[in-house]
Image: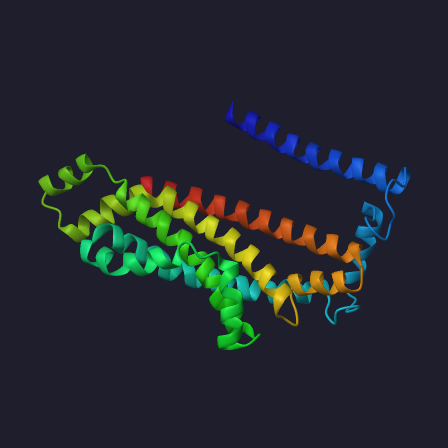
Length: 260
């Protein structure tokens, strides 16, 4: 039954995309409802996509080079956010002293959108890799801390009482009870952090960069090439969806391993 529902969901997803592309094609390439210089049809975008895979015009890099540059920065900042933010959130939720020391600073950082850090990072580190990696790190850091903190806090008292009854130490209860039960929320935080990282790096590249998908879109806007803009947007969406799917698979494997 579950397999049937999954197949139905996949077919509906594919159908929705196919219908969107068909309507886009009819509106732009058949009925000519919009000017090609304003909103090109799917045929034009596909041709641009294929050309951009090997051509460096008009922004000085191929599509693969732009993707590689964006991925390098996004993955570096995201990994830092996960490695630092997740353990910090767990520690804040489990140890009151750490919570008292870290919470005031975190509460100041949390409301600030990741994009708001970009001008400051550019002033501090210039337009190189460091400024963008730090900006992405801050965007990924917040959801990792929040979700790991919430996951640990939601550990049921009855489970902890059982651990105490069997003589488990405080650290053993953290590692054997609290962390495993918090994994669904922790993994959700990791997924949210990845989405935030991907969004943030594209925006950062639009403001200050010499390569990347955001830079490619910004340059295309300057020379009025909507076909390249749409090509970049679709690339960003496909990569983001692929990352989300991969993390969902990882989450299932991790949670199944813990349950065993």
